[in-house]
Length: 156
Image 1 (cartoon, rainbow, N blue to C red):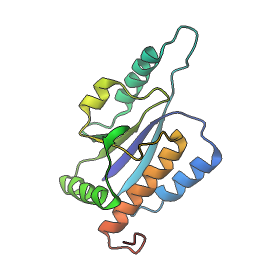
Image 2 (image 1 turned 180 degrees about the horizontal axis):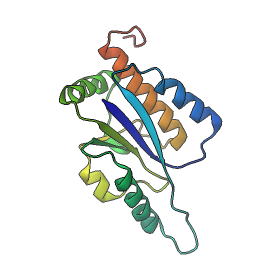
Image 3 (image 1 turned 135 degrees about the vertical axis):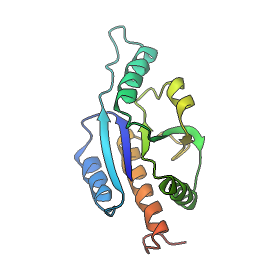
């Protein structure tokens, strides 16, 4: 199974890349975690938020793995616990379907992409830096896999 994180934004601070890479390499042979950075649309010069979101939408759609389950991150999404994420991941693993997680840009995601999603998930009701969201999502996915494998990483 492959999990892909599509994240609008490039040129993250080094600590973001290092932390993401650290979690990504912890997954075993059966699950791969990949990050695809999507170029953000430049704002200003007549480019409205709506036009920027539309341009980023097109790039996200083009980068989506074929037939992957689509999970978008949004502050208005479902607020799952780590245990609930593990249960969801268990079901997705049983389906054998790849999963694509989408982190939007500064102005968010298109309504069309949110409607297309199989799940809209919230990491926090607070607005977070997008680089931090990458790291938090990678950590939570690793935690979910650890829970499923009865690894002592997660403690209740």
